[in-house]
Length: 295
Image 1: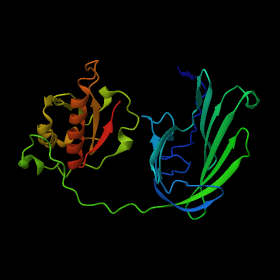
Image 2: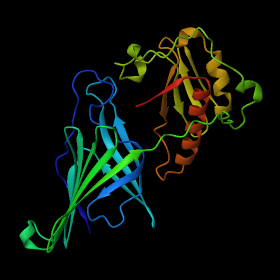
Image 3: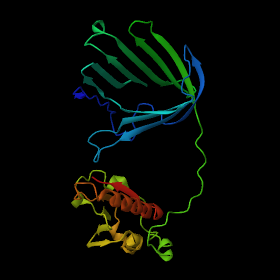
Image 4: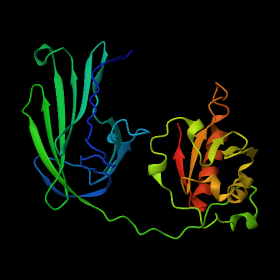
C-alpha cells in the first residue's frame, strides 16, 4: 500500500496588487515544430491548462496552482496533472517516487524520479526533468533530461508553436428547463451599473454582501437581496432577478453564488445540485451578470 509522504509545499507569491501572476502562462494548444536530440517519437501536440488561484479579500496575490498537460502521440493521448509549487512523493515497499514542480524565474521545472533506495547508490533509479520556457518569439521550449541508472543520460529539446484559437461561433443561450419563452426575453434594468469589484473586494462574510446572493439547492435557488428572500425554481430565477429594484445591486452586475452545504452524505444530492448550478449560471450569463463564487 502506498503511503503519502508529507513534504514541503512551496507557494510562490507576487508582490503588490497584481491581478495575474508574474510567471509565464503556458496554457493553450501547441504543435511540435522542432525536435533536437534522440527523441524517437515525441508528442506531436500539447494541450496545456494552467490554473490561477485567488483568495477573497486579497490577503495574498494570485498564483498558478495547477498544471494539466495532454500529450498527443500517434498511439493516443496521455494526460498528467501537477500541483505547481509542490515537492512531494510516495513510498511503497519496493521504492519511492518523487515529484517536484517549481519555478526558476521564468522557467517551470518538472522533476520526477523513481528510486529503489534512499540514495542512488542503493539501487536502480530513473530521473526525468523538464524545463519549460518561452523563446524570444513566443514558442514553447521544453528541454528534457533523462538519467537512468546503468546507462548514459540523454537530453532532447522540443519546440512547440502555439495554435491560434478557433473563432468563437455564435451560440444560442441554453434553454432552462421549464422557463417560458417570454422570460428568456427579459433583461436587467439598464441603469444598473457595471460590475465594480472595488466595492466588494474586501468582503469575506456573506452577511455583509449587499447584491443578490444565490444559494443553489437540489430543487431550486434561494435568492436573497436587500429586504427580500425567496426560494424559486430555476425556471423563475431570471424573472425574479429582473424584478428586483436597482437598489438591490449597489455593486453593479454581479451576484454571489454558493452551493448548499447540507446534503446527503452518500452524494445522492450532488447531481441535482450540479444541474441546478449550471442552470443558474446560464441565467446569470444571459443577463450579463458576473457570478462571484462563494465561499
